[in-house]
Image (cartoon, rainbow, N blue to C red; front, top):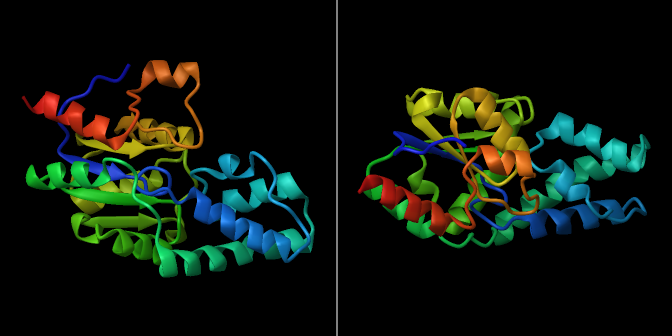
Length: 222
């Protein structure tokens, strides 16, 4: 398993890690699919976890077929979810405020690396009152390939002025964790929708909540 030491920077995923945004995504999908006479299929959202737009479209067609209505629903759901995020935001995950306060107190630079588009990311962070903590924000509409490609994390590290090996990546999805490993980061998993398989659980640190991550950092700092 990856051994942990105090990082020089921390990169956060957003959906399912910092905020419980999956119900909002599910609501947006239901609205967009219903306009085309379709229903949200079990397991669909879990399959999309960590996917940027091109990969997400491919997976959507694998689930629903190649019809024009499917493509329209795919495009429409981004507009719906953006409006929902702007209007409502998303609930913060347990321990987020405490972890951000601790990292800020220690002076560690922080970044967000999310497959979600920037307007939605900015809206969620503003609603949550945590935008000020992040020095760099990299988002899925900047042309990065989907996780498990490490590009979005590498860009975030560059924005923070650190080398990958100096930073932790906090992720909830297996694809995100594999992207962190591929980029040479220290991967730290806090699962949400998708639990790690035995192989992944044996190779990376897995925590039950962000409060547990804070407790681990406090232990390492002493």
